Length: 429
Image (tube, rainbow, N blue to C red):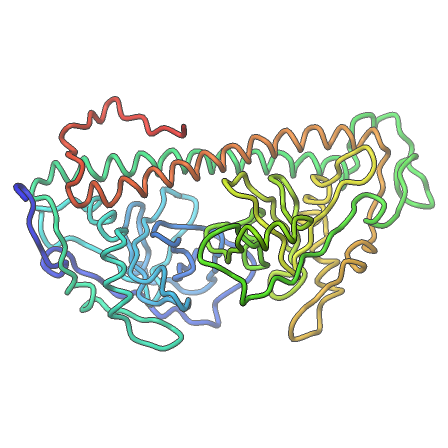
């Protein structure tokens, strides 16, 4: 193909190993020193911040990463090795320090003939990653090395300007996705602040004229009760693994509850017949789920807008509306920031495999505010959730459009010279 050539990655990049930071300085309490791991790489490449590790010890400046640095993961704990070799880029975040940990490689250019942002996207192509995964070593934990990455042979444009345009087009999608994520975070924080103000600090609308009951310590009209008075509950179905298929309707397991949402990118599926047989376990967008087993016990997540209905697996619970007010937003914040998670951990703690039952969840102590307060909060929070779900849907569409473009741009199937970057507007339609 004119204007394109095959190269080996070792001819254009160097990869620097990270540092083995000492475990004695790893801390659970969040701070500003982010110790990056393979868990910070998304499937398909790119950086994610939902599984942070923190460090509180001496720092060698040689292993502090900078905004825009490109890193690759050389270890993968999954059976599929589905993040091995993929790249991520350090975000623009001056408030925090990003540490270059071992088993991560820092990518730098050996030649001025290439654009580093283009190389970042080159290392996010499936055909590159499949080669790396196929040549990996290790039975349970997969490993690669700079030498194996260097040996990858890829077709690339000779023009540095073409490389820049390709990177700019793809990055435009990621910029829109990142902006939506920031909006989602702000909306979630606003809802959480409202919950904390009303139900923790008790500065709810009208609190100025409300007296405190000396016996309960609560405002008049408020009382102590159980979650069962606010919400209903449904446990999931024991779907048989032998009936799982490669495509069809997603089954939501505890592993899919992630960062207050439901990750549907890595699920098992059931066929239409099995789905119809278990229709009572079909989930709806906006449903609030909770993990009942394992390391994530007590964590909650909201079902996003997806193309196909998904289904509730065993050891995952769904909260159900009872009465006139939909209290799922109140319950969501109760488990996220209001102490509900700690209640679950206290009940489930002490076992090798933490577990909690539906009965135990519904028997957790809670304040019971007056109907009108719960109703006002519900309206505010549900409207916020609707906006968030739409932003999540937009992001999913943006990712799909980007992932369709990525291999076509990277193999020259689309002539990038015909794309006007000034009018480029990735669409969510």
